[in-house]
Length: 362
Image (cartoon, rainbow, N blue to C red; front, side):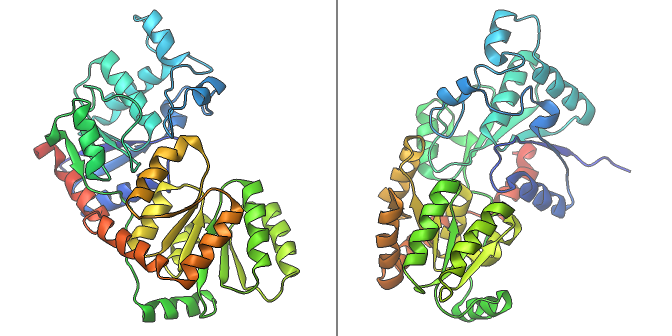
């Protein structure tokens, strides 16, 4: 029996919304390739980011110049004859699976793949899926053979860094969420046990920020059904106790990530921390994203989306309430939905998958 070509997907603990599994499933469904997904628990030298990693953050992407165990790139520069553990592990993976190419879906995975390629001088091609609306903060390198990016501005920036245009594919992000008609939304709400009124999806990562936002939302009364994502059982119990004091407000708690798409596709507004996949899904679905952000690390990305009319942005929870009323009571939400639909109409998992399974022949 003929061996199917293998694609090695390298990921890490900072992966966003299960992108590795999404792509692996889509590729395997084509039946032409096998896929091996390798997380940093098998190749990495550290599971958590060091304090220095965080201090050297250049905005969403860590520079990974120093790590707790093997001192990363700095140590390897001082002792060029001795490979770090992760370089050796990646080399062993390549010998074991002999993949057609490596697809990196996180900044850390990309850093490790490039480091290993430079040190081991292997010829396996490296593709970097840039999970961002703006260009990578690290400089481009000659070890990366191709980039998959979300928009033309990212491509233009990479070209200015010296990357050849043919090696940059503008294909959106691998998150498909088909937009529902009004009738389909009404039916889906019934199946989820939601009332027919407007629905607001709330996904705020920081516990303190979620508490403050939730209390302010409760104070507004029954202006919309609230679907609140909260995976921590104790925190969810505390929020449920607060909600019990305002029985007129319709509230549903989403306890698992798997339910996100089901609730999101029937929502009118999504209140969130800055979250690339969630914003992209909202744009696909025609849901208005309301991003709470005053984080300097995400300012470039948030400002970029604002400049193109793709999100509403609140700098704090009080401003969030004012914007929420605008989104629920004016045509602002519709404007954002139209802009998001146009922005993402050419991007799809199908397009990315088709490129990946034909890449070696390109």
